[in-house]
Length: 330
Image (cartoon, rainbow, N blue to C red; front, side, top):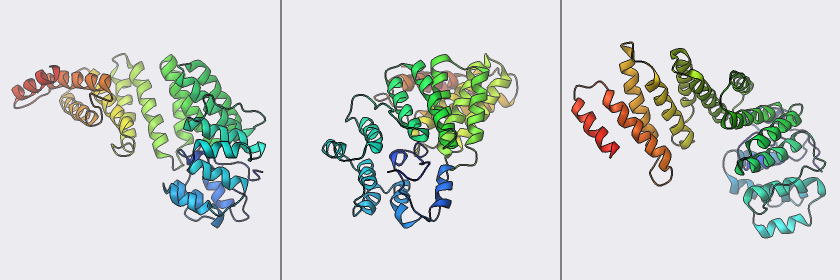
């Protein structure tokens, strides 16, 4: 059924991450680019649906497949536009090779309560199924099982899809940091993942892992200026990509962490006063995303940190800063 191997599953954002490419005689160059995490400029006619989906035009992608009668086209249409009724219909008609992938999409959409088993899947398809199981473990706060599944998924994808394997390693690094805290070994893992993604078009993924790398240095700094400066460097590097429009929560987290790194530095140099000002501005940026209703803990933490920073901010009108600090505390 799925003749083209390997498939670029797991590389791009959902729902593109679940789409499958049909075989075509003129797709070698495009396929090579996709497997490297790059967005091609020219596409085979039979892959136009994928190009449209990658550009965010999901309705156009579905329409490009509307006249196709193959099982693969039916599956891809379900990825792009689905319903529980459509899932039930396809479940009884799709060949067995596509069933685990169909169930994976259904689980992601909430049509199933548990992720599918990997059955006889191999390589990048197996990696995708294991990644889904890892996501389920994370939702159940079982970080250790998630780490093991992500490691197995990375190994399964490593030969057929090195970029997907790198993304899985990055996801594993995030899970390890949340589960076990920062370590020097984790810093090396982040650096390796970021290096593997360097030549891809996956800028947001790379920025997310760069933010994680900065957080590792920050956590291990223990007040040491050198490690804090490394954290600042990686936060700033991440913020070259992250914006309030494309990934607001990561953008706010990067600004919040940048401010905290600056605030943790001892005030020994004249330039530290400038850093205090940057910290205040970064907290204000974070508070453009965090709000009291949706992120009460993050919002209140940023408010308190801003109030603390304002008390020490050099200014020709210090009373104004103190008044604002008091209002924030209240």
